[in-house]
Length: 193
Image 1 (cartoon, rainbow, N blue to C red):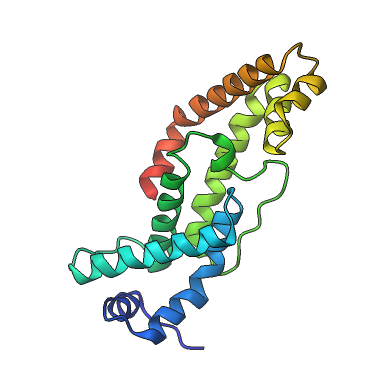
Image 2 (image 1 turned 120 degrees about the vertical axis):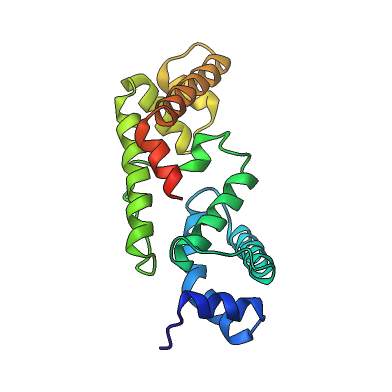
């Protein structure tokens, strides 16, 4: 199978070469689809995000603004991730940022070691702070991540009202988010993106 250098990929996309577009799809679409579908998206969302990212790369390449500080795969993955987070409402819902904690996260082999390491560190950071929450908060958020209704959460947790379950879920989610955002490792990880 032919392998292209980052420069060849950018040049091929800039010139809209069909072979290069097909190559990028074959190499990167499964990774992007996994990212989107694992974070509340659909196959159609993945296609949209992938197309939008290709347009961004094309425009930046055409305007000579595209200077890579990482591999093309890492750059493209970051563009797609940022587009998806923007679409989700800029990190408003922790459920949409992270996949379920209890399930092991498997990333496709085509993700470079560098990308795997960064994503792995983000998951570890999330898990560290999730596990530092009280048992009550952990249980509420696990139920919420499983898409259990607020009414059912109230019943399971022994809360008197659905409204209290909603408030409790919000408070726990905010506490988790604040712990993550205030962790010095978080700043290092987002600086690497």
